[in-house]
Image (cartoon, rainbow, N blue to C red; front, side):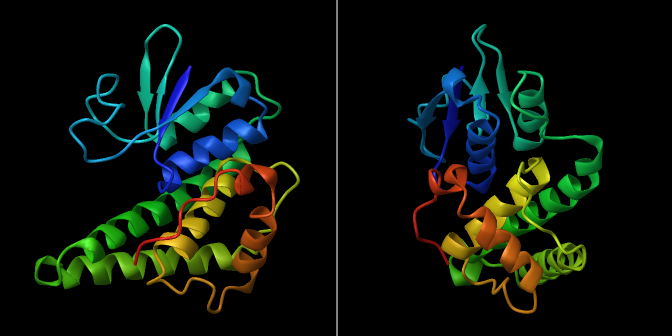
Length: 197
């Protein structure tokens, strides 16, 4: 199998971390690709051109983190990533990441093209979800599930590439969760480059 990823994508990083956590990395060749590039190496495999994209041995192409993390559970890894208890939390974290992505995309536009309404909406959504997660008092587990992994990747993205959001302020439980998770070898091996807003 081949996994196409971009090192700055929290969605792709979640897959890369999950492969390492579940012991499935040896079955996958990771290939970095560019995004929004007509010559991106992922395009011959997926016209969508998004990451993560997983190409199976039979040529089947799967995209989107919300589909790929459950798919990894079918491969017989060390433990299940999406047990029933993780589904609700996973949905909340997915909403957080989606809000951050829209907010960040808006901030990358030239100032005269930005939508203050979209920025306000996504800022509110991201903070509301983060406050909800803080109230749940997350603790980094010995075996992180898909929700833990995606949240760790989202907070890592905010820390390194979306610095406009001071997510640590007033959220000590999330900060402890992230700081503990960030020390895991799977997270250390997939740290994104420092850039962004």
